Amino acid sequence: MWIDLVIKFALAGIVLFAVLNLAGIQTWVERKQSAVMQDRVGANRAYFTLPWWWAAPINWLLRKIGGLGLLHPLADVIKLLTKEDFVPASGSRLLHWLAPWISVFFALVAFAAIPFGDSLHLFGRTIELQVAHLDAALLYVLALASIGIYGVILAGLASGNNLATLGGLRAASQMFAYEIALGVSLIGVILWYGTLDLQEIIRRQGDLLGGWLPAWGVCVQPLGCVIFMTAALAETKRIPFDLPEGEPEIIGYFVEYSGMKFGLFFLTDFVETVLVAALTTVLFFGGWQIPWLAPGAFSPNVMALLGVGAFTLKVCVFLWLFMAIRWTLPRFRYDQLMRLGWKILFPLSLANIGATGVLRVLVR
Amino acid sequence: MATLSDQLLHRIREAHRRRTLSWWERIYLPAIAQGLWVTSVHFWRNLFLHLAHRVGLFRRIPAAVTVQYPDEQRPTAPRLRTRHRLMQREDGTPRCVGCMLCETVCPAKCIYIVPGEHPDPSVEKYARSFDLDLGKCVYCGYCVEVCPEDAIRMDTQRHDIAAFSRDGMWLDIIELLHPGSRKHTDPPKKFIQLELEDFRRLKQSG
Ligand code: SF4
Ligand code: SF4
Image (cartoon, rainbow over all chains, first blue to last red; front, side, top):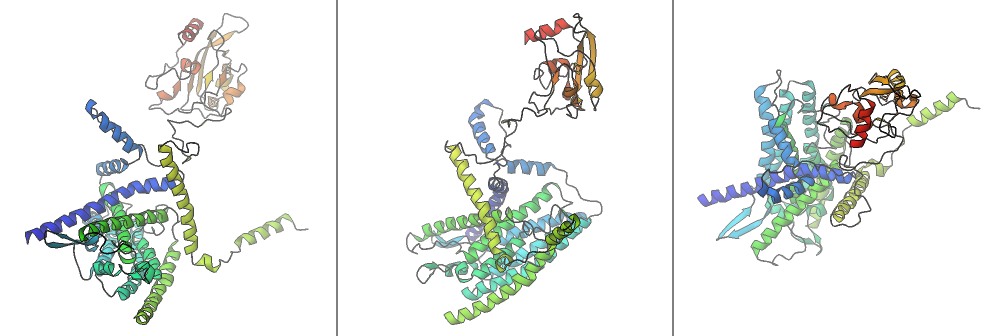
């Protein structure tokens, strides 16, 4: 009984640690990847040294790390923590305070249902490498991801600033346009694998189609995959779908935020990117499955750990891809965004359901 | 023969006519892939070069166009107008004859000269003090152009004129004759007046 609780806490701790670190390192990746893509050098100036003589080797290391720009996230945090926390007089103090927490909380809690590995067998118990083993995990993740948007809308409305309100409203309409395409595009996956349980969906992606093609979601649902990735990118509110922020025009829902509360919104964006990368991996790229590796090649525990490694690697590849997209494409205009969401993605995802249904019957 | 306005109208109409996009262009995905291809090629190429530079390979091919400014300086064209300096005669006295032409022509009124009598009657005058306030200077170069003695030039190739105070942007006559001799923490010797002997001694002490 107690030991179960401890195991769950440990799992939750591991997931939280990994996610927050991935999100934090993304601020560095964002700076460096964009720089390298644009033939620049990127952040490389922040570093500090310790004043004592015996700290010389540490200082050498600090200088090296600083030269890579790895201390910039630290400098960011110090800056954000020491900034004035400002609430506009016409805003609502409570809601203004609540909004960033809602955003970041629901983005983090959604990770509870993401399976990051096969089950481990230790001391006669079976530990599922998933914080909460839910039968309807997919629904849970989608629901929480869409609740997070309330934080953004609240931030816009509670700031008492017209531009922030505009940003919040844009966020709301964008979410409507994309949430539907997102959900509907996943029905194809659910039809194909016949379950809402993410762990089960991954297990069913372990087969090989025709003996060589992994039965990954992307192979059986290519259209669904493209629609899902597009809609999910819109969900993260980053370029090319950063209409709610739109720095050069309306600055966005967080225009009245400063200090760590702004930092939380920033963090939410990165956490959501990690979430989307993890979801894409789980649903369309085989989760922790390593293709072409025979199931009994190593002992089950080693396989499970290798699976965790594969999952992490896939997530990182997607983080790289999303970052590359963010630094390649310009922002959509508002009407283009709406047209893409309602007139293209939504009908396409409906067609995808029809095609999947027919195919499923035929294949059976 | 078409008149100019006809041609203009035609061009404007041309510019207004929208090119119809082909089907491939309208589905947008190939264009995204193309864009990603371009940026990714840059990314992987530069990443490889950065790593290779770490181990001392391919140093000739730059991985970034960045100039790390205070550490590295980009060579500037010799005709670029940079910080002023006063020219010296062989013995270290200023070549300036205190004619006040530059002080008069300066549009920013940032040159302050006090002339003194020169013992040599063919020279007549010299600048006892010569101050230039870079905080006001607009770098127009008129002072250089107007000088009959070629006594003031803007060719030090120094553009690091940032300072912590207005005083830090003040160039006294010593700094003008010997650019870079003052530490940026030292205050300038405003309106300091020097004899010819002082100039000679300054040159000898380096
Ligand atoms: S460059 Fe122009 S503004 Fe500056 S000192 Fe010379 S004349 Fe005056
Ligand atoms: S114009 Fe030349 S000679 Fe005349 S005062 Fe200025 S620097 Fe001296």
